[in-house]
Image (cartoon, rainbow, N blue to C red):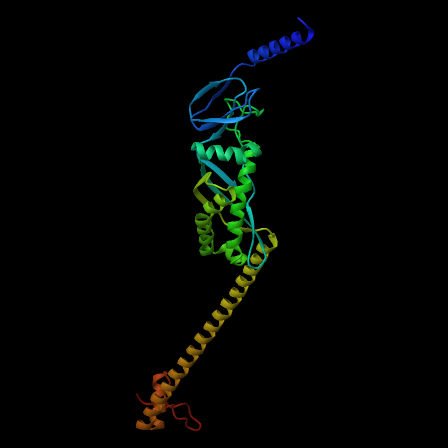
Length: 317
């Protein structure tokens, strides 16, 4: 055997050993995950083979690749909550104030085979958004298989987060920051905008229907600048003080009017008494009225006569 033939034999033997030691490719999908399956053998180009449904164990030739994706209800949380995918959505009000809007949505990934393959080939593979894959050295094991890949978060922020940002920002620019912050009707407008526009915007950005939005929850927007809320507090305090002063002045005015009415009533009573007295005088004469007045007050209108050089003569009873 010449040297060239020997080298060919040795190379073939090495390939055989490699194929033997490499073993088979395998995937076992849990009840809430599906997989896309690709043939990527050492001597063939990478080609799509099939979709693997939930709760399925698949064994294939060496070099085959499996990429898994979730079928269960997922959440995209844009808030200050620990573990949220991102922070609140920042928008600009009509009067140019920045507002942070916490939002949470729930959605499902569309996992029919056609949509799943397109998503994987257009976005999932590029951004490494899959949970596991034959060429992906992931850190997901059976005890922690739902640890969300960074690529999945990247996809959500790119398509869901930016769609939320555009929807909320366009609606927020119709209102002043105070209305966004504390007007229930405006809050309803934000909710309605997200509910009616978000799905279409996500589909447009992704170039297909890959996520189905189930629920949306828009929480109360908050101004980014704390001075805005502080100014409201000062304003409310000033209004409260002004109202207190006004109420005190009003109470004093009411008291003064009451005193005035009481004084007028006293004058009216006195005038009525004077008219009654004058009427009596006119009837009985002033002298008789004075005697009657004295008697009424316990005064003797007939004093004892005084005799010169003598004592007081008591009037006869």
